Length: 267
Image 1 (tube, helix red, strand yellow):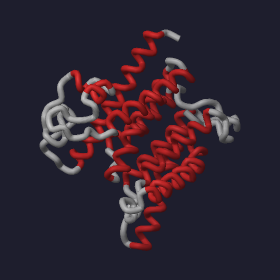
Image 2 (image 1 turned 90 degrees about the vertical axis):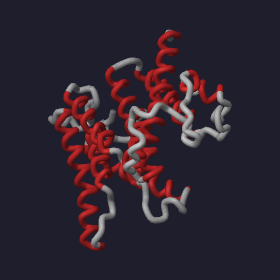
Image 3 (image 1 turned 60 degrees about the vertical axis):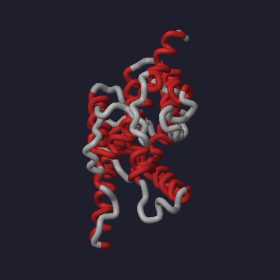
């Protein structure tokens, strides 16, 4: 195992984890029409005293350790979520590398994980699924399926191309929630599921294929209810369904990789 490669990958995964923190913080504020911030400006700063963070303190993980978890200027605690995001990305990224090596498949798998991770945290924190990241999952899935990167062969010997399965997976996922919301709207005269969840489940279907959706929805629903039970106060009136579905996808892929699920449509 090449030490240089591991070092370079470690830096990369920690940096993407740091970027995910930036996206989570800034996309949420952009959604709530905060005109004082965008994805590029102002420079990274303490969220309390607004002091710009020095270059060395922006180094993933190391910067948090150097500052001992506190802002150098105002001495307020820095949220533990920042290094947590970085460590999670490092752990997942290196796991993909150890199991799959450096391949197109491992790149696509990590890219989808990175996007889904931002969506997961945004939904948990603010019931918000950024549209462009949400739709990006489907675009990546379609592109990967077209070049036969995303899917492996199936047990049923269906004479269906991967891109066709990906498209059917998107349509199935999207309209499954769309019809549930339609029935709820007719009964209660209000929406019960956000449009972002339609797109997300469609994207999940385009990644893993239509036959996986029943397992993912089941696991995702259990995940959503578990999240509610952990924090009943926050989620008493609204549930982060998108976060649950993403957890369902992660668990499904993990189980499927080790052949604990029966179907062969998987990343």
